Length: 385
Image (cartoon, rainbow, N blue to C red; front, side, top):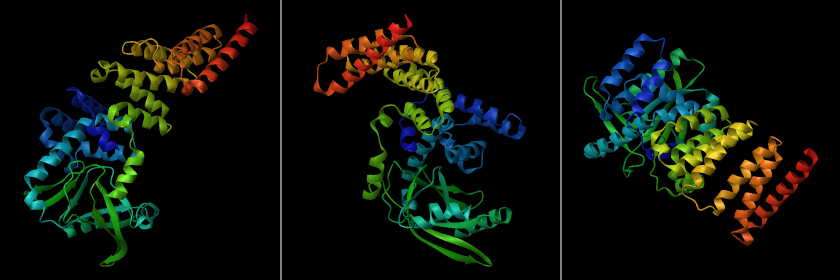
C-alpha cells in the first residue's frame, strides 16, 4: 500500500529541500555526513536515485530505519526520492530487458533473531514475504554468503539467512519493477527490486556453510496479477488511498495510535502548496486534526479546525448538502463538551434543518441521534440558566 500511496503523490519543487533540511537535523553532529548531505544538495539528480540507495549513503541509512520502524510521517519526506527511484527502475529494466531475461536466480544475505525468522518466514512457507524497502540482491551467491559471515561475526545472537530468489520467466510488472545494476569498478552485478516487492516462500531449510549453520529460503518473484495476492490487496485497498494519499498517511498514523505524530504530519500538510490550493483535500486535513484534538479533549482547537472544515466545504457544497450534517454535529458536540449548550443547540438545529431538506428513510437514525442531542442540550441549558 505504501508503494501505491507514494506513486500517487504530486511533489513540489521544494520537496528535495525539505528532505535535505531534515537530514541535516538528523546528522547535525556528524561532519562527514553533513558534507555528504551538502554534496547531495548540490549534485543530486533524479537519475542518481538508485546510486544513493546502493552506496550506503545517508539516504539509504535513514530510509532503512524509517521503513523498519513505520515512521510514516518521515517516509513522506522521502516520497519524491522513492518515486524517482521507481521511475529509474522501470527505465533501466526496459534498457536491460535482454540481459534481465538471462538471469534466473539472485541471492541476498540477511541476519535476524530466530524468533523473528520463525514467525515471519519459517512458519509461513507457501505464503508471501515482502521486504519494506528497496531490495538489492547479488547474482553471485558467494557475495551473499560472505555478507552473512561478516554479520554473524559481529552479531552472534542472530541467525544467517540466504535468500535464493527465482526470477526466471517472470512477467515484468511496472508496479513492481526490478532492474540490473552493473558496477564495473568492483566487477559486481546486482539486481534491485522495488520497495515492497512481494515474493512467495517456496521452501525453508537449514544448510551448512563450512562449520557454520544457516537457513536457505527459496523465494519466487510473483506478479501483481497472482489471484491470491489480488484478493489480499483488494481487502486492504480503499478509494481514499488513491484520491487523497497524503491524508491517508495521516490516517494510518492515527490508526497506529501515533496521535502526536499524526498531528505534526497533518499540520505540515497545511504548509504544502499542492494541498492549500485544493479545498476538498484541505477539508480532510482539517477534519483529521479536529478529530485528533477532540480525542485529546482539546475542544477549542478542535472547533477551530471544524469551523475551517465548514468554511471550506461551503465553497463547493450547496448549503443544504447532506455532507454538512456531520460537520454541524461535530461542532455542536465540541460546544456541548465545553458546556456551551446554547452554541451546541444552534449547530444541532442547523444539522436538523439540512436533514429536513433531504427527506429519506436512510436518514432515520441520523434524525433520531440529532433529536436526542437537541433534547439533552435543551435540558442542560435550562439547568444552567
